[in-house]
Length: 266
Image (cartoon, rainbow, N blue to C red; front, side, top):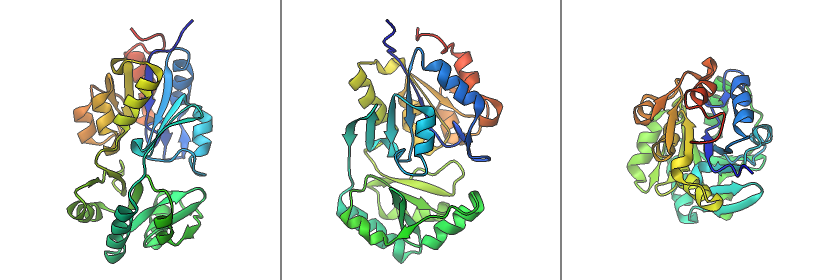
Protein backbone atom coordinates (compact mmCIF):
# COMPACT_ATOMS: atom_id res chain seq x y z
CA UNK A 1 0.00 0.00 0.00
CA UNK A 2 1.31 3.46 -0.95
CA UNK A 3 1.71 5.43 2.29
CA UNK A 4 2.69 8.63 0.44
CA UNK A 5 5.97 9.19 2.29
CA UNK A 6 6.73 12.46 0.53
CA UNK A 7 5.32 15.99 0.53
CA UNK A 8 4.87 18.46 -2.32
CA UNK A 9 4.09 21.91 -0.90
CA UNK A 10 2.63 24.85 -2.79
CA UNK A 11 2.26 28.52 -2.07
CA UNK A 12 -1.16 29.71 -3.27
CA UNK A 13 -0.98 33.25 -4.66
CA UNK A 14 0.85 33.49 -7.99
CA UNK A 15 2.07 29.91 -7.65
CA UNK A 16 -1.23 28.07 -8.09
CA UNK A 17 -3.62 31.03 -8.12
CA UNK A 18 -3.20 33.49 -10.98
CA UNK A 19 -4.10 37.01 -9.92
CA UNK A 20 -4.88 37.97 -13.49
CA UNK A 21 -8.17 36.06 -13.41
CA UNK A 22 -8.19 34.91 -9.77
CA UNK A 23 -8.33 31.27 -10.84
CA UNK A 24 -6.07 28.32 -10.11
CA UNK A 25 -4.40 27.60 -13.44
CA UNK A 26 -5.80 24.47 -15.11
CA UNK A 27 -2.38 22.88 -15.63
CA UNK A 28 -1.45 23.42 -11.95
CA UNK A 29 -4.75 21.89 -10.82
CA UNK A 30 -4.15 18.91 -13.09
CA UNK A 31 -0.64 18.54 -11.65
CA UNK A 32 -1.98 18.55 -8.09
CA UNK A 33 -4.47 15.81 -8.94
CA UNK A 34 -1.77 13.67 -10.53
CA UNK A 35 0.65 14.22 -7.64
CA UNK A 36 -1.94 13.27 -5.03
CA UNK A 37 -1.67 9.58 -5.88
CA UNK A 38 1.94 9.33 -4.68
CA UNK A 39 2.59 12.40 -2.51
CA UNK A 40 0.93 14.33 0.29
CA UNK A 41 -0.24 17.73 -0.99
CA UNK A 42 0.34 20.72 1.29
CA UNK A 43 -0.66 24.36 0.94
CA UNK A 44 1.85 26.74 2.53
CA UNK A 45 0.56 30.30 2.50
CA UNK A 46 0.40 33.60 4.30
CA UNK A 47 -3.41 33.30 4.29
CA UNK A 48 -5.67 31.71 6.82
CA UNK A 49 -7.20 29.22 4.41
CA UNK A 50 -10.31 28.99 6.60
CA UNK A 51 -11.25 32.63 5.92
CA UNK A 52 -14.16 33.46 3.65
CA UNK A 53 -12.03 34.65 0.71
CA UNK A 54 -9.68 31.63 0.82
CA UNK A 55 -11.83 28.63 1.72
CA UNK A 56 -13.00 28.18 -1.88
CA UNK A 57 -9.42 27.49 -2.95
CA UNK A 58 -8.83 25.21 0.04
CA UNK A 59 -11.85 23.18 -0.98
CA UNK A 60 -10.83 23.11 -4.63
CA UNK A 61 -7.29 21.87 -3.90
CA UNK A 62 -8.32 19.65 -0.98
CA UNK A 63 -4.81 19.43 0.51
CA UNK A 64 -3.68 16.81 3.01
CA UNK A 65 -2.26 19.56 5.19
CA UNK A 66 -2.13 23.34 5.36
CA UNK A 67 0.56 25.66 6.68
CA UNK A 68 -1.59 28.73 7.34
CA UNK A 69 -0.37 32.26 8.06
CA UNK A 70 3.32 31.56 7.56
CA UNK A 71 3.42 28.60 9.92
CA UNK A 72 1.58 30.06 12.91
CA UNK A 73 -1.32 27.65 12.33
CA UNK A 74 -0.78 24.16 10.93
CA UNK A 75 -3.47 21.62 10.14
CA UNK A 76 -3.23 17.99 9.02
CA UNK A 77 -6.58 17.09 7.54
CA UNK A 78 -9.13 18.42 10.03
CA UNK A 79 -6.70 18.27 12.96
CA UNK A 80 -5.01 21.40 14.32
CA UNK A 81 -1.43 20.35 15.13
CA UNK A 82 0.10 23.78 15.86
CA UNK A 83 -1.31 27.13 16.91
CA UNK A 84 0.74 30.18 17.89
CA UNK A 85 -0.63 33.59 18.84
CA UNK A 86 1.02 37.00 19.07
CA UNK A 87 1.24 38.62 22.47
CA UNK A 88 -1.49 41.30 22.80
CA UNK A 89 1.20 43.80 23.82
CA UNK A 90 2.97 43.35 20.47
CA UNK A 91 -0.30 43.64 18.54
CA UNK A 92 -1.06 46.88 20.39
CA UNK A 93 2.37 48.36 19.62
CA UNK A 94 2.07 47.45 15.93
CA UNK A 95 -1.40 48.96 15.61
CA UNK A 96 -0.40 52.14 17.43
CA UNK A 97 2.67 52.62 15.22
CA UNK A 98 0.64 51.96 12.07
CA UNK A 99 -2.06 54.43 13.08
CA UNK A 100 0.48 57.12 14.00
CA UNK A 101 2.19 56.73 10.61
CA UNK A 102 -0.90 56.39 8.42
CA UNK A 103 -0.21 52.75 7.55
CA UNK A 104 -2.81 50.09 6.73
CA UNK A 105 -2.13 47.21 9.08
CA UNK A 106 -4.46 44.54 10.42
CA UNK A 107 -5.95 41.16 9.64
CA UNK A 108 -9.07 39.44 8.37
CA UNK A 109 -10.90 37.30 10.92
CA UNK A 110 -13.79 35.27 9.56
CA UNK A 111 -15.76 37.60 7.29
CA UNK A 112 -14.51 40.83 8.86
CA UNK A 113 -11.46 43.01 8.19
CA UNK A 114 -9.79 44.84 11.08
CA UNK A 115 -7.32 47.43 9.70
CA UNK A 116 -5.87 50.78 10.63
CA UNK A 117 -6.31 53.26 7.76
CA UNK A 118 -8.91 51.08 5.96
CA UNK A 119 -9.06 53.51 3.05
CA UNK A 120 -5.54 52.39 2.11
CA UNK A 121 -6.82 48.82 1.89
CA UNK A 122 -9.79 49.90 -0.23
CA UNK A 123 -7.52 51.79 -2.62
CA UNK A 124 -5.22 48.79 -2.96
CA UNK A 125 -8.22 46.53 -3.63
CA UNK A 126 -9.49 48.86 -6.34
CA UNK A 127 -6.09 48.78 -8.08
CA UNK A 128 -5.60 45.02 -7.85
CA UNK A 129 -8.99 43.35 -7.85
CA UNK A 130 -11.68 45.93 -8.41
CA UNK A 131 -13.99 46.31 -5.44
CA UNK A 132 -13.67 43.58 -2.78
CA UNK A 133 -16.69 44.64 -0.67
CA UNK A 134 -14.85 44.16 2.59
CA UNK A 135 -16.60 44.53 5.92
CA UNK A 136 -14.34 46.74 8.06
CA UNK A 137 -14.51 46.90 11.83
CA UNK A 138 -12.58 48.66 14.60
CA UNK A 139 -8.99 47.27 14.51
CA UNK A 140 -8.63 47.81 18.26
CA UNK A 141 -11.00 44.88 18.76
CA UNK A 142 -8.02 42.71 17.80
CA UNK A 143 -6.60 43.32 21.28
CA UNK A 144 -9.33 41.06 22.65
CA UNK A 145 -8.96 38.42 19.92
CA UNK A 146 -6.40 35.67 19.19
CA UNK A 147 -4.02 37.06 16.53
CA UNK A 148 -1.47 34.83 14.83
CA UNK A 149 -0.16 37.19 12.14
CA UNK A 150 -1.04 40.55 10.67
CA UNK A 151 -0.78 42.04 7.18
CA UNK A 152 0.50 45.39 5.96
CA UNK A 153 -1.06 46.82 2.81
CA UNK A 154 1.08 49.43 1.08
CA UNK A 155 4.45 50.08 -0.53
CA UNK A 156 8.06 49.39 0.40
CA UNK A 157 8.47 52.66 2.31
CA UNK A 158 6.02 51.45 4.95
CA UNK A 159 7.88 48.16 5.29
CA UNK A 160 11.10 50.06 5.93
CA UNK A 161 9.40 52.08 8.67
CA UNK A 162 8.02 48.96 10.35
CA UNK A 163 11.32 47.07 10.11
CA UNK A 164 13.15 49.93 11.79
CA UNK A 165 10.73 49.97 14.71
CA UNK A 166 10.12 46.23 15.21
CA UNK A 167 13.30 44.10 14.89
CA UNK A 168 11.50 41.15 16.53
CA UNK A 169 9.10 40.99 13.58
CA UNK A 170 9.74 40.26 9.90
CA UNK A 171 7.83 41.81 7.01
CA UNK A 172 8.26 39.63 3.89
CA UNK A 173 6.76 41.49 0.98
CA UNK A 174 4.20 40.04 -1.37
CA UNK A 175 5.40 39.25 -4.89
CA UNK A 176 3.82 42.43 -6.28
CA UNK A 177 5.44 44.48 -3.48
CA UNK A 178 2.10 46.07 -2.58
CA UNK A 179 2.06 44.73 0.95
CA UNK A 180 3.73 42.37 3.37
CA UNK A 181 3.03 39.69 5.92
CA UNK A 182 3.68 40.69 9.53
CA UNK A 183 5.17 37.69 11.29
CA UNK A 184 7.25 37.13 14.38
CA UNK A 185 10.85 36.24 13.54
CA UNK A 186 10.63 32.62 14.70
CA UNK A 187 7.57 31.80 12.55
CA UNK A 188 7.88 30.51 8.98
CA UNK A 189 6.41 28.16 6.44
CA UNK A 190 9.58 26.10 6.86
CA UNK A 191 8.79 25.42 10.52
CA UNK A 192 5.28 24.39 9.47
CA UNK A 193 6.74 21.94 6.96
CA UNK A 194 8.94 20.42 9.65
CA UNK A 195 5.91 19.97 11.89
CA UNK A 196 4.00 18.14 9.19
CA UNK A 197 7.03 15.94 8.49
CA UNK A 198 7.16 14.93 12.15
CA UNK A 199 3.41 14.38 12.29
CA UNK A 200 3.35 12.12 9.23
CA UNK A 201 6.78 10.51 9.79
CA UNK A 202 8.24 11.86 6.53
CA UNK A 203 11.89 12.72 5.97
CA UNK A 204 12.51 16.41 5.25
CA UNK A 205 14.66 15.29 2.31
CA UNK A 206 11.49 13.80 0.79
CA UNK A 207 9.82 17.18 0.42
CA UNK A 208 9.58 19.80 -2.27
CA UNK A 209 8.25 23.35 -2.02
CA UNK A 210 7.04 25.80 -4.68
CA UNK A 211 6.86 29.56 -4.11
CA UNK A 212 7.16 33.01 -5.63
CA UNK A 213 7.62 35.64 -2.89
CA UNK A 214 9.68 36.50 0.18
CA UNK A 215 7.55 34.55 2.64
CA UNK A 216 8.52 31.43 0.66
CA UNK A 217 12.25 31.94 1.16
CA UNK A 218 12.72 29.74 4.24
CA UNK A 219 10.59 26.85 2.99
CA UNK A 220 12.27 26.85 -0.42
CA UNK A 221 15.66 26.76 1.31
CA UNK A 222 14.57 24.07 3.81
CA UNK A 223 12.66 21.60 1.63
CA UNK A 224 14.47 18.73 -0.03
CA UNK A 225 13.99 20.54 -3.34
CA UNK A 226 13.01 24.20 -3.51
CA UNK A 227 11.29 25.51 -6.63
CA UNK A 228 10.90 29.19 -7.52
CA UNK A 229 8.27 30.20 -10.03
CA UNK A 230 9.47 32.07 -13.11
CA UNK A 231 7.30 34.99 -12.04
CA UNK A 232 8.86 34.97 -8.57
CA UNK A 233 11.09 37.60 -7.04
CA UNK A 234 14.79 37.50 -7.82
CA UNK A 235 15.86 36.85 -4.21
CA UNK A 236 13.82 33.65 -4.17
CA UNK A 237 15.10 32.50 -7.55
CA UNK A 238 18.67 32.91 -6.31
CA UNK A 239 17.96 30.71 -3.27
CA UNK A 240 16.01 27.98 -5.09
CA UNK A 241 17.33 24.65 -6.31
CA UNK A 242 15.40 25.09 -9.53
CA UNK A 243 13.59 27.94 -11.28
CA UNK A 244 10.62 26.84 -13.34
CA UNK A 245 8.53 28.77 -15.84
CA UNK A 246 6.00 31.52 -15.15
CA UNK A 247 2.63 30.61 -13.62
CA UNK A 248 1.02 31.38 -17.00
CA UNK A 249 3.49 29.13 -18.82
CA UNK A 250 2.63 25.93 -16.89
CA UNK A 251 5.50 26.36 -14.43
CA UNK A 252 4.14 23.92 -11.85
CA UNK A 253 3.56 21.01 -14.20
CA UNK A 254 6.89 21.57 -15.98
CA UNK A 255 8.81 21.34 -12.70
CA UNK A 256 6.93 18.17 -11.77
CA UNK A 257 7.87 16.66 -15.12
CA UNK A 258 11.48 17.80 -14.72
CA UNK A 259 11.79 15.93 -11.40
CA UNK A 260 9.55 13.00 -12.40
CA UNK A 261 7.16 13.61 -9.49
CA UNK A 262 4.11 12.05 -11.10
CA UNK A 263 5.22 8.80 -9.53
CA UNK A 264 6.65 7.83 -6.14
CA UNK A 265 9.60 9.73 -4.69
CA UNK A 266 12.95 8.10 -5.37
